[in-house]
Length: 250
Image (cartoon, rainbow, N blue to C red; front, side, top):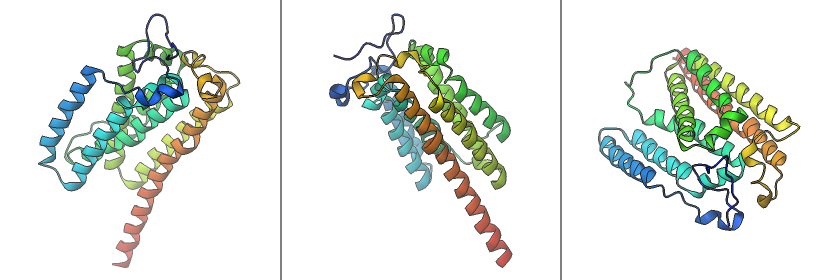
């Protein structure tokens, strides 16, 4: 039987925290979500006719990542383990968001400066890691979707800004995001006590205490999470450097 993870009288959107033996059967078959994803697939299919090959690939990849995040057993696992929730959020903001940007029409408008969106995205990420807001997101479906939408929306605007900025500005924004992501991860790693009430009784079935679960989440955010932004910054810088060298050689 799944562990109860009620907060007040409500379960998290992804359901009660599963135990290891039942995880693979815990697909999220929310009919509203499935209808929305099906409708989105049809819209993407029609939109893909007017896009290039790379954009079509990005559209398909973005849809598959969305299904993985919200339909696959990964969704249920986030109810049990905070480190899985961290992976979920990283996939949302550092994989799905840039795929969405890649699939957008190149002429799509993006208002606001890169610095503004970098700051807003950082604020959103930190806000949803505040214990009270995090607990609220796991006790209310409406708040849960506000969390997902604000994380994804701010990340899309951030990556959109990165894609349009001058290379050195883009690198600076990515490095700033890397630093704030690493700082948040370090704070979670070195915390002396678990701070997320929804996971106090859901981790032991997985062989982790709640503090160990939180520390693992911090390490994931601190190293591979921040590393995604470092890798993107390195790629943009290397491409800029190669172009500059080619220009000098011409």
